[in-house]
Image 1 (cartoon, rainbow, N blue to C red):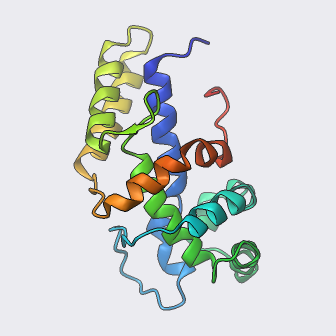
Image 2: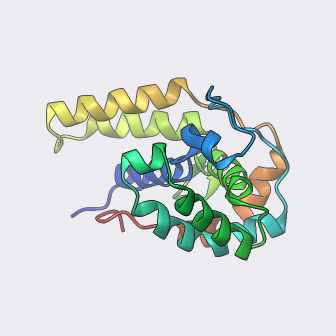
Length: 189
């Protein structure tokens, strides 16, 4: 398997998607959550400790999340919620909801980092480059190409800008550690 710029950018998109795995189901992680789902990320200033604790907790959280079916992720059992809360608390978060808020803010920044230069360029630039790479890829079937382009164009329309510039600097400071802590997708290494 060849590793191209497109596959690196696809890996970055996959990493960001991994961060947002429960964003649409965020109400269940938050005891005060409502039935209406707001997919807007509540941005706040990250701290060094939060990012370091995220890095430490990520593998254990990902191990739990990776085992979930779609049904379980939409309607988790109390035992699963307790397990996620226990891992979060063991890593100095108040609960899984706090871990998820930190994760969302880190993911928002990661979506705009060019993985080759490790510089923040904005999610729109990263996605537009990936669109160009997919359009130029002669090895993909027409259907796969169209599916991927549809997904990328949908992502492009739903980009949320980073409103706290300090988060960019902090995530870039720990970029290599964050990426190393994330689950690896088979074939993307």
